[in-house]
Amino acid sequence: MSEKTIGIAKFKATCLRVIDSISQGREAITITKRGHPVAVLMPISNEKNTKSIFGLFKDIPLRFDDPFAPATDISDWLSEE
Image (cartoon, rainbow, N blue to C red; front, side, top):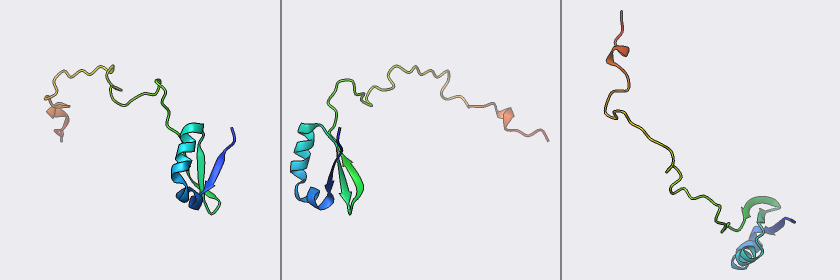
């Protein structure tokens, strides 16, 4: 896979065409400013195996014995001086 680059001035002038070509060609393009890479524009994946953050923790069990009880006993805070 060859890496494509485009200067920032050319990208600014033709950004809609560049975005269309990325979505059709499925290849990333590196945007450069004065010869130095500043950004990478890549197509998003439409595959079904990508995970959504919604429901990510649905299978993690949560258990609260007494959520309103103190975390420690009061005697742990009292000094024995």
